[in-house]
Amino acid sequence: MESRAYANRKSDTRQKRYGVTNEHRRGKITREICDFVAVPKDLMGFVIGTNGSSIKLIVRESGARLTSDTNQGGFSVSGNEGQRARAKQLIHQRMEEAQTKNRRKVYPRQFVKIPSEFENLVKGKGGDNLHNICTVTGAKVLSRGNNSFELKGKKKNVQHAELLMKRRVASARVKPDKMCCYIDDRNLPGGCELQLVPVEEEDRMVLPGSHSQHRLKPSEEHELFQGACGRGETVPSYQNDLVANALECLHKIKRGIESNKFHEADLWCHIGTVIIRDPDEADVGETWDIQEAVDKLKKRNWRLAFKEGVQISKHLLQETFGSPKTDEDYMSRYDLSFITPQGRSLRCKVWVANQDVQTKLEEIPIPFSDIKHVVEELHFEDEFTRSRCRGWLVLPSQKYLQADIIFPGCQVDCRLMIRPKTCTAIELNNSRDEAEQAKALADFLSRKLTFTVTDGLHVPKKELPTGLLFKHMRCSRRTLYEPREGFTLIISEESTWCSDVRGEQNRETTDLHLGREEWDRALAGKDWEPEMIASKLPEFLQFVYQVQDFLTMHNRNI
Image (cartoon, rainbow, N blue to C red; front, side, top):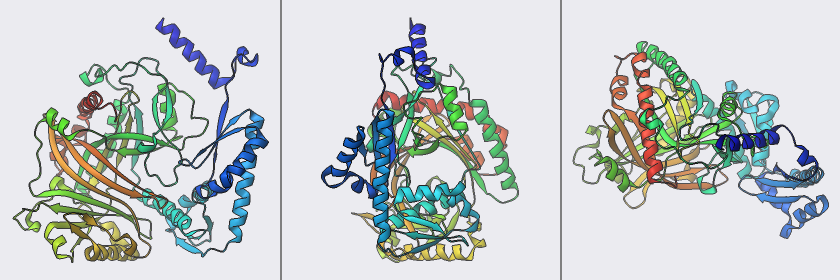
């Protein structure tokens, strides 16, 4: 019976994918298609009209049904083919009218300079990226040659366009040497098909330029076969490929350490959710078997983002894993992220000491060996801040391997990373402009950052040096557990603020950072072999499964 039911579902899926049946032709079954028309957010009101007058006219003239989606920025259009085509035509006409009116307005011009090696990246093939930036932000962006771009429009739209351009450059500077993505079928029944499921509003990420966000989940509800892989009964199909990719990256890092390019490395993973950004409209509502979905990922048809963190009770963690190892000297860490005029990410890390600490701050080691890639240490002018805080300006870590593992049958996914580390940011020494920008930011933070017991760390955003963009701030309080001998689980309770100019987002979450003590000891020095490190990955995956099962069992709302 089960095989027959599955065959019927499979037949329905293939009919939907490749054509209609005779019953469809006879009109016994009708399925209405829905299209999405993207509209810049600053034009949504114009398309809708006063009290909905314009959108009502479009509905009346086209016969289609329209639903506005302010989060994605656009309208869902349903009806027959002719109705949908007419509605889309009228929406585009309305947008052109609004843009014509906007062109008559005179806005001040702004010029943005992009490093020459990233100019084509910002433009995109045939100017696709610039066109997308214009559509998303409502600003007009023109290439003026010599790595220069002219931005026109409302102040907020221009700021948003500048942010998207510089974030693209900043991301390219630290793009992982190797990126891969896998789908793990644990907890899924045989022959299970997958689909894209929209992310709930409260779970969306702040992703500049992103309209829709989805997760890959089973197309039908099923009973969880929880814990089968966690007990080591099966080996994931991607395991050999993951080990091979890790081994390749470890060999590169080892050569870098031997030549003194790097000093050490680390290997660990985050628990969170993999987000699929802005998939094609044709993919939404479609279904795939696991291999078909893997092929989509390999061909880079889907852009991915990773949202760190879960919702889990601290009391439950202590009840399950026992008392944590806490740091007696430091109470929290702040992470601030900036983008320079040259399109480079710079981060500020500030450690806050406990109130009753007796030792001089300079004599207290920083927990978890967190301070690497240092550009400059900060020297706070505010007396109370100086008595409680130590801070550094650092570069983001270069990733040699970034492996996302999607678990459609579980509530959470994971991202595994291998990174080389160095103690100084030699890279900035090759650019006078960038070194001066980093120096200006370090001086600003030393003078203006203040810490108080009641309000925490304060950043005067409106006083930032010209050209610097402030995009992210996080306060984390970390504790270390050992849920299994030889393995570590760092729990970070986090308060996060982030902005993409259009708006801000504040969220409270718990970040889970999984590691292995043997890796930490070996990779902190030079006496290790890539084969030894990579051979431990299968056992580490079983530890990931164990943590997943714990989260699924105790928190159904992750």
